[in-house]
Length: 254
Image 1 (tube, rainbow, N blue to C red):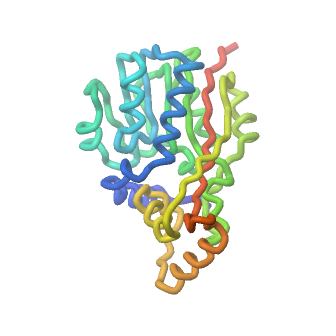
Image 2: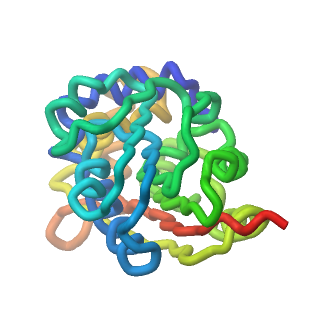
């Protein structure tokens, strides 16, 4: 399914006060992306653009570990005040709007994004757009999700995003980029109850995929089925994130 920008903005704006505390998997993804960058991409980038910066978790992590002179941050939501509070450096510019359509003012040595591009109308086509904004040998560092992401919720509700798979990313990347790393992982979280799962999804904005009103009977049915299928021996229930991590370098133009 494709989710409207208005719906994404509404859900993530509502989740801003609770996102950092509850975005456990997303935090792990940012740490994995940073490690990947430092190991295979380096830490020297003159100009950096982050897509979908949110409250600034990934931005802050990058600022602490890489050397750069120019930062641009982008998000669909108006999070300028959050960035002002959360970022250790103030030498950044914030662009609000959809990165699939915005015109950025610079060429970048690094374009980074964590847990954002899966919400785009055409994530694969966005790679070409990024290539246009990269300097020669510039890099992209992306964390997105695989088709099996949150499979527990999709199996019970029939609702989920249309994620490109690993092979599609590989094929699309190779037209403009040299792939330095492409990997699919699993992060399984445990919760005390299915209601805790729903609360977690709401507090991290992920309920943007579902705009239905859930009445009491539907919630009760969901919780019963979830516990039957995904509870362990201790009564905890699982929720599985399946991130795809990628680091790629722009090819030389012939």
